[in-house]
Amino acid sequence: MPKYRRIASVVALWACLFLAAASVSAQQTMAHMEACTEWDYFGGQMGTRNSCSKPIAILFMAFGDARVIAQDVPPGGHFNSGATEPDLANSWMFTACPVGYVPSLRFSTENATAILESLYNCQLPGRPGS
Image (cartoon, rainbow, N blue to C red; front, side, top):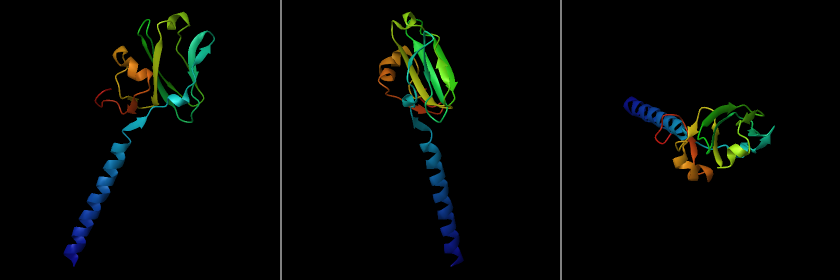
């Protein structure tokens, strides 16, 4: 009997390790947090407020100059792009991810259509696509 208990213990240990690895893997991709933002002009410049209870990481680009502005925004905090209405005449895009995550698509004009249609998730940095 002791031999079977040892085998059962090893099997139970492997099952626990597998479940722990699956849990970590599942957390490497998260949904975007665009619903936490409501964009508008504040003091003549485009910006948003984080209406969620968790901090968000915003990437913003006005297509006119293609400069990327990145900022972590705490709950209730504001993001100011510095862009005025004339600056945004050629349109603009943004992503919103939990702090510590990046969009699953490279934040570039080549991916603008997918980003504008919110067709991205958020992932840990360094994964393929980021």
